[in-house]
Length: 261
Image (cartoon, rainbow, N blue to C red; front, side):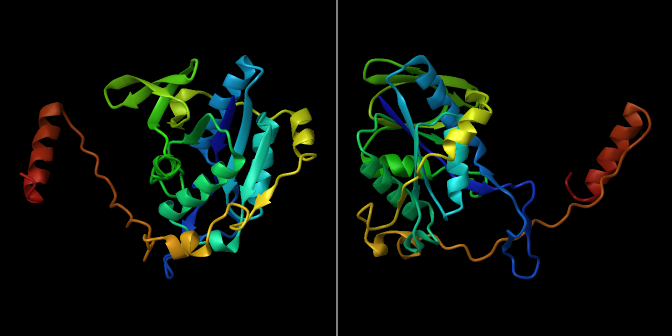
């Protein structure tokens, strides 16, 4: 069985700031990390590999050349092989164009039984790429997966919902997007880190995955971001003191004063 995990290198959102004048992200000095939900997806694949010797785990990403460092982190966690989709033609892609490129990469890898992906990336938070990739591959997709059980030619999953979960059985090949509640990602080992840097990571451009430049990147992106901005700072909170009755009276007076009541 071949499992492919779609991963993404993202800026650490705890360190991201926005230029107040230009309204753009300040990326200088911001560390890049493996997208957290993708780490859960990779861990799920590696756990299946731990239990089945005939399982191989491949990781695939689209990004700049430096994304190879993130792929080596995935190899050091236990993935068998990694591929990088990197080309100027892929630049400026929205979720629509990104899914086209990733699907083309998966086609080139070939013979994939199950595709894993994170629920969403912390830099975009759209949760659109996984389902769009499945649509382009023509395979079923289950989102928000919090438990996985593989059978003979099928996968049974628990899909997270607000008030519980639903059990879904789907035939392979299929695509699953994973949530953080699925598992706790493992750490890299020293030995595997060394091995990861001995492995070659193929880099594919638009010609390698048989894509026309007009079908990828900015040229194929109907979504345009006009402005990014930080929300205005909230005003200072006010603490009420006294007995319950006194505080209740003060609260009602405040709400009436602001015309909420």
